[in-house]
Image (cartoon, rainbow, N blue to C red; front, side, top):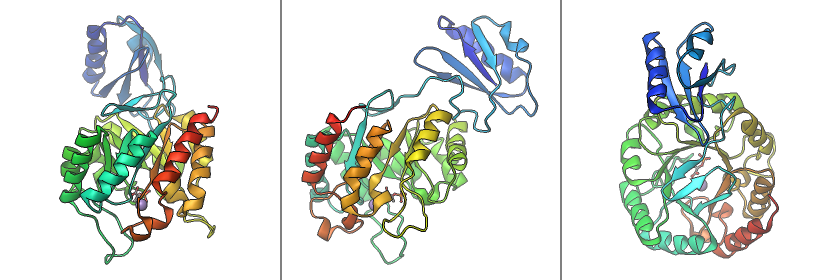
Length: 330
Ligand code: PEP
Ligand code: MN
């Protein structure tokens, strides 16, 4: 159930609602929105009686939430805007996130950050820990990579997003990063999702490569149910029979998530396509369907990139893409 507070409800009214819910042996999660606060009730096995809450001061409505993902559900909720450093995702803008697949060196990151920042990217991406198909492939620089990302933030004022590949590293990743990425391969790693719920930083949750929309939203619910409400969803392509691209970008999933959830949803055209020539057109398609932004791989020397060179845009291409995106009707 969702207890929707009146616009002029006071903090003590919200507190009284929380106490009432906790007094019933249930969990209460206050969710401040742009217009008003809602309090989500978790843990009830059967339906609750709305009248129990309607009599409390400051309560506008008590509405049953029909979806299994109570905190993620958009029913009677304003769309969320997530802050990442000084950048925002959601709320009608189109957030550009860009950077290399992997952090390879300080020089590499500085070169790429300078270019993508000048072109309009507001969040820098780069993996310090890389989940690779082969155990013999480059696995990332680890903590040295995190330190390089921190220096990128310092120099260019760009918040950074980077992946936590497992339970062991998530704390350390959250210390350095402004946003913690949970990768496609980990979307149903429930202990990692719970840890992300405690990491203290906004989370970028990629869709698993064979996950349904409901499974993806339930994964977000794991993070939020631990108290971290700052979650951004990322569609990055799913595995299909198609062999003309690395994955198949499922833009209709973005439309469905929009209808089902208040969380922002962005698109990763790079991992969807796996090839440079498809990245810009897919990015523009994401903008046209009103995704909340994109995360794009860019490399100044993709021929020598240690991972995902073939799908990385040259800085010039990213600049052109950013200009084209700014001219698209939205
Ligand atoms: C990445 O963004 O670096 C990455 C590995 O993506 P995904 O988890 O979507 O494959
Ligand atoms: Mn990559």
